[in-house]
Image 1: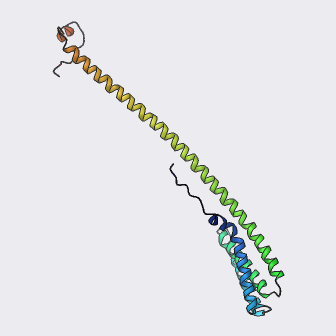
Image 2 (image 1 turned 90 degrees about the horizontal axis):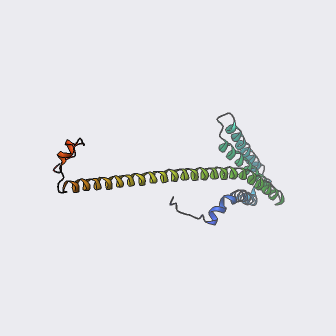
Image 3 (image 1 turned 60 degrees about the horizontal axis):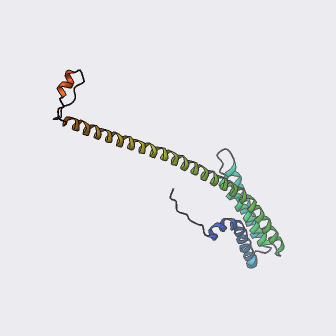
Length: 198
């Protein structure tokens, strides 16, 4: 009920939304650096990147096969395959137009895939907050009922105590009246009253 209110820093809120663009931009920048250092039209480098991209794609396919397939691992492997393919083309190509076109395409695909996970995460977060609120309301209701019951029991006990005290005072006051004879009451057929000594 007394939760701390914490506001997320704007950078922490924006970083997950910028991650796909940062990832594809990093791959493009590194590939262009690699291009400037001799990867342009290098057949060995092209074969290496092709083999790595195909290996990552095969790993993703193997990770997704069967009922025990791991979707996260498969998605990571396919993303690595796409990144390696982008890096290979960007490192091998002459100009900047083809690498930029592939970068834009890869960024759009990355945002398309990430949006699906963001929606799922937002849906799960909303459902969790809803369940938490319902539980809090239910517990608060139970707490209010128990508080009312406790107050009622205290009032009943207080009234019983007041009644018992008043009865004891009345019995004591009656026993001290002049001419009060408890045996005469007993002889008359009234129930026996406790004696003043007890």
